[in-house]
Image (cartoon, rainbow, N blue to C red; front, top):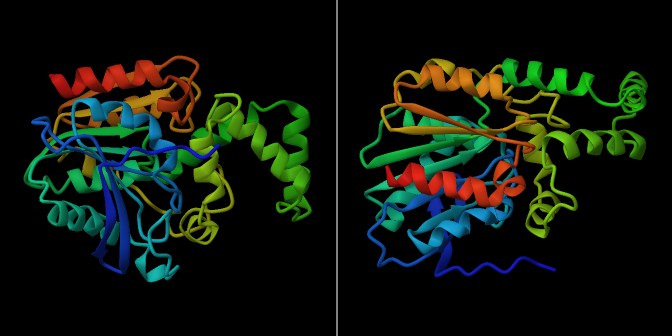
Length: 293
């Protein structure tokens, strides 16, 4: 059953490279700082972030799809796949919607964008949430190689054999990747419709071009990415969150916290990369407390 969103407003804006879609939950009468939500991927969409609509009872929650993702235009031009251009989308959104004061939430690759944007210390950025962020590709790959090595031996054997034979597109290989995702991407069983909707709408051209064939292999444009040096100049109060079994591991996320001047850390038991899905109630309450400080 398709997830029903209760947007008070939605539309498209002209951004650098094409039109991007946005949707707003909540009342414009709220005096609380609006929250901009940045999805992961690259090439995913806003849909899997549906649990964050729980915050719309107290503030505006603004979702958008990046260029080449979700409901936004998909030129699929690699010239657009630069972090600097994705930052311009946030500026364009703020300008179009007159968002002088904002909090920003970024998940995974969305955390890449959020951290880089925050490092510019833009006017009006009041709070930052980095949800299981990708902030260094080498670190990410090392963490997920370790996760992969801990898969059941029979699953790992299939993976290795398929990779050796160049059979990564086979159903057998994809089934083994699903075992990894069920442990480390989203542990909810079954996956909620809003997560399935994002995965079904994934722009595989963008995902493969920027990242690679799966979460533990990167041969795309982000293969040499390192955002750690930017963390020390972020001035906004920051909350870094992750799950016990996250692709962005607790050890890595604690490292990020140590590098950000005013940062807190929250970890969620028995949760994975989509912590706000696996531990929805606790996650939303944690955000409420952080925003209320």
